[in-house]
Length: 348
Ligand SMILES: *[C@@H]1O[C@H](CO)[C@@H](O)[C@H](O)[C@H]1NC(C)=O
Image (cartoon, rainbow, N blue to C red; front, side, top):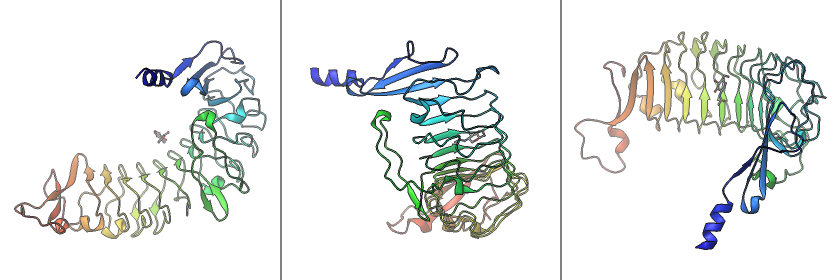
């Protein structure tokens, strides 16, 4: 009992914020230690909005794992900015709101443990094909930039066939990777909302789980646009004000997709049932604020896992048991299920 108590006490997270060595006077540094004997620690450094006279690279403590450098008016990201000691251990880095319009091909190359990168709210139009090369990036936020087109090839590392080690100081397993045309790819989450994309970027075979393409001037979603994204669980295609057409089989291949957000696409007037072909795991479909006002009767056969569909202003539809069929037999459940909405005349 005493041992248990001691064990659970020593597992409690300890936070130490004063006296972190090599903390820049205008940054806020915090060390979180946890585990038995405080054997693991995480150093978080917050250097947001340091002002125009801050000279880069900002010195940060050795072993820093999370760094926030947002709102520092950095401009083009040169090789020198992220090169100091302490940077090599970063697991996450926030470079949002910095007027970054260019990332030098080697600017991030020292960050060999970097898993999460926020480059949102910048002025990027393109990225050099090798700028993420060799990084175990799993999550990238590129929202609020000026991309007119985007090549997912930036996430494929050219070399890097050595197995990534398990880094216990971050108490975290380096994420599972997928092999794409002989290249190692870790990327799981990409946010490209609020850019200038006119087409869906090509993403064949990426291990993505989350993809956000909201608020881009995309006019059409073509057959096979999301081909082979079999791990994708969440797809957001909301606020596409120019979107008029979603071709049949557009979502084919998204066999694990659970949530599809097609809300606030006012020019999208109709969807043929074949649009939903292949969405066998889809549970939630959001069509609120789109031009789609009715659903085909046979929707459930196209979306066998669907639980909820939203459309119009506040119309909700859900799967329910057909009235009067109380004696359902095991194995024949599907035949008795229908889509019911909180308004009449939606399911045609
Ligand atoms: C994607 O970006 C948008 C706009 O910056 C933001 O509102 C949204 O929360 C982001 N999604 C995730 C999962 O971070």
